[in-house]
Length: 240
Ligand code: ADP
Ligand code: MG
Image (cartoon, rainbow, N blue to C red; front, side):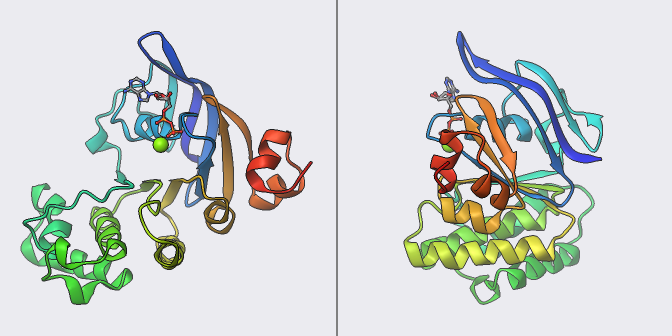
């Protein structure tokens, strides 16, 4: 059964149709990468999946259950954005624990264990007492990812999480994200990027979006060797 199934999903803002009928299945534990030109609807599609934005029509199912009207907080989803949006006056520990402290029935000790486990995964344990401003951009982005992990999401959504980092940090953090996916192997991840190397190295499958529609879905090798269109070839690298 698919972790996420999108059936003829559409989204318009006023008279502007942005998502024009997307059908897609994301498998449980899969690392799915969305690529496509700026403005094609990648961020909008992630926001629809997260529930931050309502779909205009279509059906969205998680583990086979319709979630069209399910509140974002009930979807078991964590989202990591390009800008990490940490609370500047809170320590790294407090930033990572904050969401958990809002959940009912979580004791201090359980929260501490969860935060420390996430911090270990991302190798930021030694920074737990620091403030965000005392960290580099890459470290801050790890904190943002760590904060999402502590919530124990079923699905992780990343919207160009590395695009504010310099080249060396991008590579290091990308490797960190790949490791994370291995360690959390039942966690489904959807990752938006316009970086071809990120897409090719991280993805189990890539979904190429074009103007609010799915152009092609396949493994990196399938898209590279058998692009359906010049558009896909242009994105993935091999000329048709
Ligand atoms: P991408 O992430 O692929 O660059 P977006 O999903 O951000 O693209 O945007 C797709 C299109 O939808 C763009 O033309 C954008 O201007 C439009 N759009 C996104 N959000 C809104 C909104 N809240 N109101 C109106 N138009 C929007
Ligand atoms: Mg975007």
